[in-house]
Structure formats: C-alpha cells, structure tokens
Length: 280
Image (tube, rainbow, N blue to C red; front, side):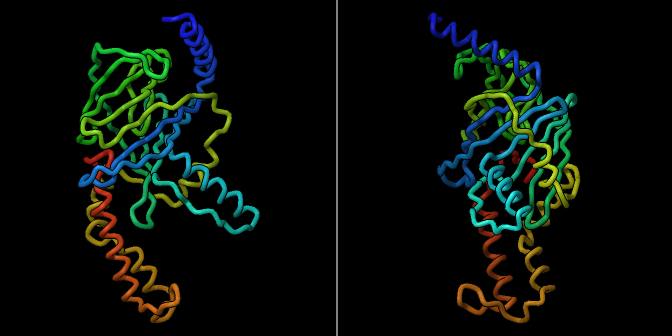
C-alpha cells in the first residue's frame, strides 16, 4: 500500500470510528436492475441506507426528494408541478437489534407493510479485495429464490446493507445476484444529519400490515384483477356515464377496459422482482 493510500485509509478509519460511535450514518448505493427478464435493458436508481440507534431505512433518493417537496408544498397550500421520476417506490425498514424487517410497498392503490422474519444464511468465502478503498470479503447466500454474491467490509462494523440484506460482520458494500439482474454498488458514506423518521411516518399512513405469506396471496388476487381499485373508484364516482379526457369522451366501461389493459401489460413487463419468492 502506497503512502498516499495509507493516509487515505487512516482517514477513512478515523472518519468511520466517529460515525459508528453515533450509529447515525447515510450510505449511498447505485441500484442497477432489469425490470423485464425477457430483455437486457438495465435501469438504475440512487438508493440510500440511513441508520440510527433504533434501526435503518433503505429507500429511493429521487422518491425521497419528490415526496419531501410535495409535503412541503402541501403545507403551504401550493400545487405540486414537479413530476415523480423515481423508478423505485418501495422502502425497507430494519429494526435493531433483532433486525425485524418491514417491506413497504403497494399493489394498485393499496399500501402494504409486509413483516418479514427471514434470516439469511450466509457462507463466508476466503476471497478478498479492495473496493472503493475498503478491504472487503466475499460472502454468498440464497435469498428470495436467487443466488447472491456480497462483498462486505469489517472496517465498517455495521451488520447492515441494501434492501433486506444484513447479518454479515460488516457493512455490505456490494451485492449482485448470479444472473446479474439486480446489483447494489457502494457510492459513499457520510454522517447522517438529515433524519428520516418524520418523513417515513407520513409514508406509512393507511397501510395494511400483513405477513409475507399473506402478501403473496394478495399478489395472486391482484394479478387476476389488477384494475379492481380503479373499477371500484369509477363505478362509485359521481362522474356520470362518460369522462372527458384529453379532448375525448370515454365511457366508464372504456376507462375500465383501458386501465385493465394497462395494468396487465405492466405486470407482464415488470416481472423480474428482486425477491422472486414474494411474487411467486
């Protein structure tokens, strides 16, 4: 290790000792993924892992920014003109010290808080390398019906990581499934002076709490009739028998048919979930 690298390494250790003592830090990841398993088109989103003494939350940074702006504008009775360009809508909570998992997601217009008791069985491998200046070690596991390769660093003694991944003797800096459909790559780490509790309390309003098994049942029901919520809203609306949209008149039955086709196409296209076992 050169003198310059040694100096950088010492600085990183001193920096990490400071933030680990406080248990409050922000880790940034690049999440690259393929929504559709039938093609190789790769999308990406900047994701964030925020931690504090009681736990952590993993979420989309663009989604966080959009929702924060929307909340601030609503408080001022201002219209939200910005578009929500985020690609990831879910977020994951982990409650320390037992790492109780809660997966927050939606099906149609229904919000769900999915409790997950999964414990990942890791196998530590001898292979080591340097990743973004940190010494890391390889670990492998099967999770969600996928095989994963993770690289973790003991130099950051936090047993956490992106999405639902945790349980290694150090922070997971990178993890990818064996078919390269989903990959989380470490971008950086900093002190977390932003906080997240108030923001995510708002995002958890009107959620239905259930187990992973019951969520899978709801998913199967949703797949059969993905436009159910839209049909209920339109049939119980006071819009009359037709709706004018974009200069054209549509009957209620037309709108329902269009929404059914749109939702079925979305399900067909977005088929490559991180956790295949949850959407089987």
